[in-house]
Image (cartoon, rainbow, N blue to C red; front, side, top):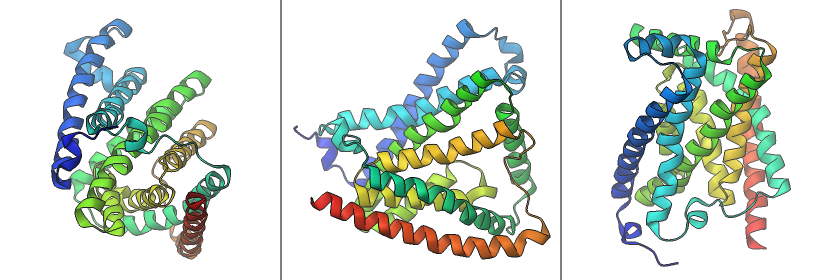
Length: 295
């Protein structure tokens, strides 16, 4: 398929266009979603802010709209503009292979101990009061949305919190942004690291910055080594879905777990062990990917 002139753009131009496209599609999809919401909900614009914070169905709906407009639509739009085909450009044209998929899935539970360790390190950083207040408000809202004993609401949460973000965020961050940073820096590792930093920053949840950045690194290397974005998408989905499932099973669980003084030593020790295991699994993933791609 013939390439468009977009592919000849410098990487910084592609990054700027990606940001512009994400902003533009977000506005369009949000406006369309807002208009459609009047058909689904009894919305009063004079009390919209109150309804938004109190009605979890409305919050869930707009969370879905936001994710689709900001993350899902732009990668497909840019892939079409590229002229090389959506499947090839976004690396979604190949089904994941069993052995690699098992390793990708194995990384997630092993990484949980590392995530707890990084979360503890993150908690040692002092943030301004307004950052802490913003984070607390976001966590409270998330817990309110996730706590349910209704199976249909649970599956709605899976779609909104796990399915759509896993697809959209991986396509735009790993499928596009990481690719452009690698082109710009001419270094795979710099590209993966910078993208992971951007990925964590864009969530505006700085009390969980290090854990989210670490997951971004794992997802980034999965794509680099396998040349198949389905592995990070599935791993991302599992990571988010487990969080939804845990709160569904135990509604008293917190989105932001607390670390007691008594458990610090255990978390540090297990976190270091987890780090070596995750690195080892990623290396195994790389070697099997290289063998698979050479066949």
